[in-house]
Image (cartoon, rainbow, N blue to C red):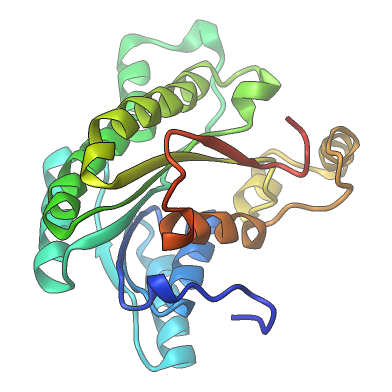
Length: 256
């Protein structure tokens, strides 16, 4: 943790569960929560990146986050890992629904199988992870669920119809669950990253021209990286956000 990073005492020893926590924004989320003293469990399918992250944090702090390989499209497996984490690490305090895949697709090529597969990855796990952790949170007196949206919805990007539908729906899910779970002291919010320069984005979609266009649209003329996203997730998981629920909050450099 950098010397000027906020320290949230309410996260110390809290159990945090992150989907897609092995690379990209997810890896930075894992690092940030781990450095707060939280007991972090994360799922991913990239064993190499995930195990390297575990070793990195173990070498840094003398303790390691808990990695579980899980394809989140398998709801039974995902909920099984959540139950296991609750039994081994303790009741989950914060769920970070980060995992997604933004592969481009031409609208005319999308068939029913592809559409369903995109929803099974980009939307369905959010609900069923929340459903599973909510039972633990209720017994433990409350918690925080953070669903990830996408600036692509506001930007109206083409070739992403299935992905953007799922991401637009994420905030509807947030709003409904915030109402259902608020009486149990469970907060539910949507975190919307802007155009974050992850390794994947730079390799597949964003070159110098695209990045120049992004910064032209942002109020802040800066390169957004995963380290800019993690602090908001920490805040939303901490007790300092105890009165915030049902909200959609962006980290986008002032694009929206």
